[in-house]
Length: 231
Image (cartoon, rainbow, N blue to C red; front, side, top):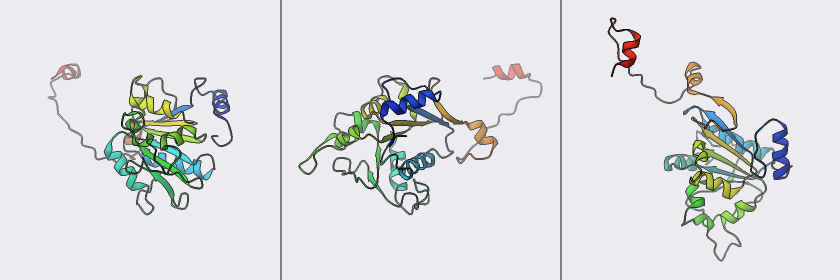
């Protein structure tokens, strides 16, 4: 685990368990989860687990959509009905770095530090996360790059496979101890830890999104083969 093993030792142990980890890289896994089954809840549960197990005090959550970051920033506040860390007894308080304070954030060595960022905030030209001032010896990005217990959780992780994407560059720049991606459509080469697809979700009645079925009835005289070809 991140707190007990070096980067290379962790990668070697995971390879010994049968997982595919490229030598010299960070271990990266994906959860293939249907949209609407609670990806953010699982992210929060993982962050709470690593904190409670004393394995990591630095968790980075990457999401590109403003709407997702808005939800994350509200859900990390204790008392929220969908509290990100599942239970306030697990993580009663955390130090949160978000879009608004990325340039001035000071991590707390005794608390769980959670960084809610977009990939572009790490790789973009005008990166507030990389700025320094007279009150800090290092930038937030400098801090993250030297963390030996950093865990990255990535929403919409299917973008990671794009060679020139900001997603891929962001995770590579951070070089985390562990990376967990979350996607409803993982790439074929992804190392998937757990899969819960839409068909299973619907069959078990756990889909939380509104679902509309549009039915177009066919004439009884049309064969199934002709119906497949119908415009």
